[in-house]
Amino acid sequence: MTSNITETQTVHVMLLIAGGHQCELSMPADAPLLQDMLEAIALRSHPERSQPNKLFQIPMEDGGPTLYFPSRSIVAIATDPPVSLPDFSPEPEPIQPLQTATTPIIIESKSLKIQNFLSEEENQRILNYVIDNRGAFEDSQIGIDDPNYRRSKIFYYFHEFGDLIKERIKQILPQITEHLAIPTFEVSEIEAQITAHNDGHYYKAHNDNGDGVTATRTISYIYYFHREPKPFIGGELRMYDTLKLSDTLYSMAESYTDIPPTNNSIVFFASGCCHEVRPVNCPSKNFLDSRFTLNGWIRRTE
Image (cartoon, rainbow, N blue to C red; front, side, top):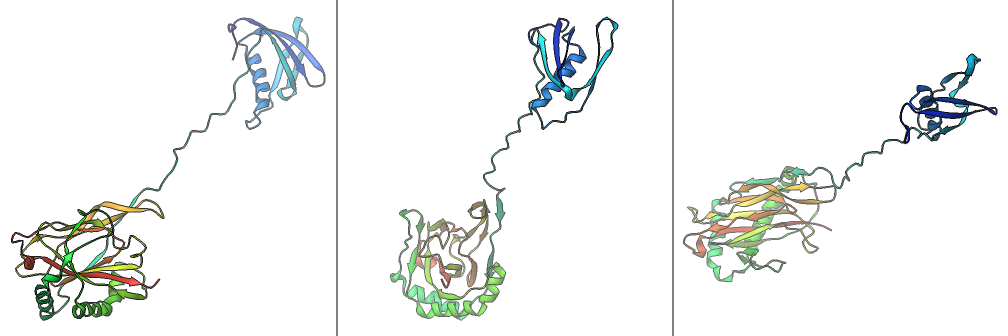
């Protein structure tokens, strides 16, 4: 509290009290009375702090009368040598870290797999049709400039079987949307294509509605068919969970579920979910031994 003086050094005090009164005192620098009076003055500049009205009692010199006055009556104090006032500045508020995002939430991917989606006869007819038209398959393409992002073969001309799959899907669409927790919607179109993955083929992580052209794709489906016994290994559909970073920002999580390709089965999932086709190992490298799918997307009206 003191400034450049020792605690026992005598301080001469001129005390001004409301009403024009004043008195002169001498006391040690560490005298409790001096500290209390200086504190009363210092508190005047901090109205946010509590200021109790303390009663001071000062005996006059030579055994004279005692002077009583409340702390709020002190107008000013002059000291010789100067004495520092107590510091009642409030503690600075701790700086809170900037909250840039909520705690990320992992949303588990949903899918619906149906075994024996077609009859055995229908399943075999699709396989025979693909084998008969193997020369019509062409290299797959995607809308990004990376030739190593996807490797497979595509076939688009199969109206009979495309219509067959589409009609079966329409019949169970309410059950599909309910299972995937997707609100019902008006269907504008069901797209379809046949894809062949042979030895070393794959499709890296992606979603199916990531641009303006594909924005109305709502549900994706994959129907699997192949020779028996299965002539390849791998080719699982890897469904990634979703990482919710905020109300408007989502990302692909590291966690996932692998769904094996099973002959005559079909898988449905939300088109916005990130997924990939794991690499296929086909020892014969024969096109007829490929992992075949009739896959596509159910679009909503805009």
